[in-house]
Length: 150
Image 1 (cartoon, rainbow, N blue to C red):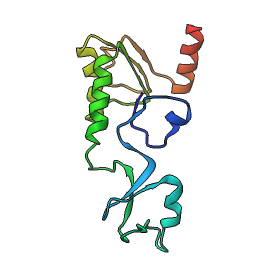
Image 2 (image 1 turned 90 degrees about the vertical axis):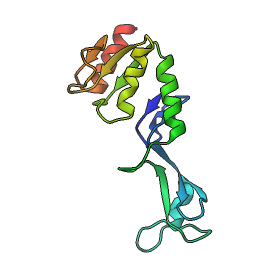
Image 3 (image 1 turned 30 degrees about the horizontal axis):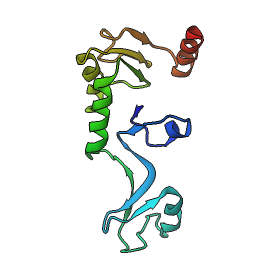
């Protein structure tokens, strides 16, 4: 499971081997000393101005998520590219497939001989290459797909 979501919902739903290419709110790290805090610990770190302050060095504490303009974690992208290269079928759900570098993962799958199925509203750059393109509401389309396979 490769996701750009940061909310931990894929893991909460029972998915295993989840690659969170944009990081996760699960942990936060001090930008000064590198101390790490779990999600349950961060609430106790906020000052009067709403900034999480490190208990060790008084540095700013940032969630371990990728913000606009930051690079994606190298290890997460390496794992995502490896999974994409091994996939017989990549199912892309709810993505426009235009934001790189993650948008290049379907090409990795297809270059390795895998196929692509897309479930998202609107056009994507891969619609013409997908073996399946469902364009309705994601929850409705996936429900119909599961019923058809049952």
